[in-house]
Amino acid sequence: AHKHPRVATVERAVRARGKRVYIDCLQNILGKTLATAYSARASEYAGVSTPVSWTEIDEGFDRRAFTIETAPARFDAVGDLWAALRASKGIDLARATRYAERAGAGRLNGDKS
Image 1 (cartoon, rainbow, N blue to C red):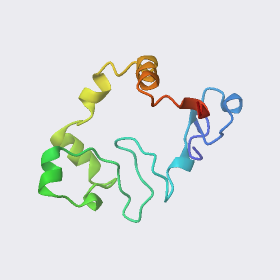
Image 2 (image 1 turned 180 degrees about the vertical axis):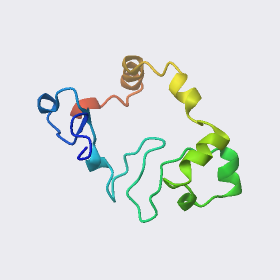
Image 3 (image 1 turned 135 degrees about the vertical axis):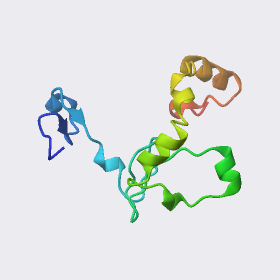
Image 4 (image 1 turned 90 degrees about the vertical axis):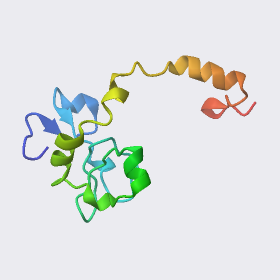
């Protein structure tokens, strides 16, 4: 954001951003658990949040192998493992909420009844 202030910002207030892209650097610090696929992570080895296959899990792997330097070559080699997920139509959250309420798990929004 500092290198490209005309197109990017770290300003949290929506009204103050204008048409600039918000860079949420507060989510990319040690101790935060929010990350999306292929995002750089705050780590001593410059890790990248990388989807893996079940085969890779079964065979074992070192998470430190997925870095900002190795991620592009991996993507070229195995493709986007999340492509099908992003292409799916997703779920109907209103329907899921109704189901949860009927199932007794609907204590949403602090409702203790």
